[in-house]
Image (cartoon, rainbow, N blue to C red; front, side, top):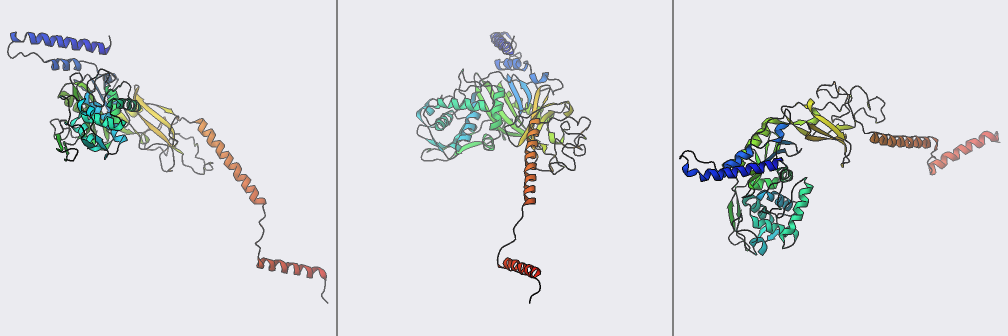
Length: 489
């Protein structure tokens, strides 16, 4: 039986149990209150397996009430916690992180966004909105604030129409799905720009985290989500102005304020239940957390619990300062005193900015690595990928070494001092095609140099011409004629 089918039966059982408990409620003692449907569903969700906890020697993650949840490191994409991360869920208003990301990428903040009849009247009156009217206008910057702070659905429609240049906001979904695919989403299909209920509007915790990697890398969007309110001054196209408060409780000043929070977006519908996409940063580690189909306020508690788990159990490891397996030990390659490069320094190095994310329960020596020479960047010779028990931990670039002071994957034992045990430092992977090409180029250059030297050696440069040169040549001729003519009578 699949996990999804199992969970379906669990929820059905919980609903039946809840209905039966409510029917018997009058016969129960006053103190023995029946659990609510939400409590039963939370219990069922907490009983679901956490896939990341099944990895040997991986730090055990917390039990959360979300049906699916993920904790991902932003830069490397390393997954620290995984619970049904590829299960399709309704995203509700967390959809809006993609809508605002596209708007930020495509628009200037001073662009004027008008509100059409459809943008206003296609928005359900009982959903989130800021009561915009037909013909009114906002700047794009105000629109992003209204969407991220107050989750305004009619503003999403207006932005979608503005970007597509039509009065049909549904066209915008094609842009959304295309951008989602570019960001690495695997099981996402969006119908509208705001997440209002639709059977064909779905995503996964993993996909929302992948969208979040781009969203939370945008400093402007992150700052907007943490703003306490929107305050739009009155204008000719907005006579009353707008003043609305931010209701997300995990931001500063909220009931569940988290000190390391970078940005966030909540979502709720009856089918999606409570969802939360957020990002936090501590000690250089930037984590994205997604919880879906949770119950309020547990979605805040579960998110904070996952952040604390990540910051306590994982760390960044700078590979250039740690790696020893890609160094040459006592081979002298490209290090002889007469090397053809005219220098005893290596020409390849591990990128000093790249890092991997490693559980504190795992040592670097236990990590597996593989090298690929397929790279779209001409400044890179290769890319090294690291993993533990088939869990990807990040990649490190091998760069052509422009700076002779950079640490290199070709360092000798002395050059690699301080980088760990040197016993296994004899392993190296060399791109033979690259070396052969480089050798051919050097041979051609050497041949050209020899030809030029030979030409210069055999070419006689004529003396300078002019009056002074003519006088010197004339005196030589006279001396020569006196020498051979005999005495002068």
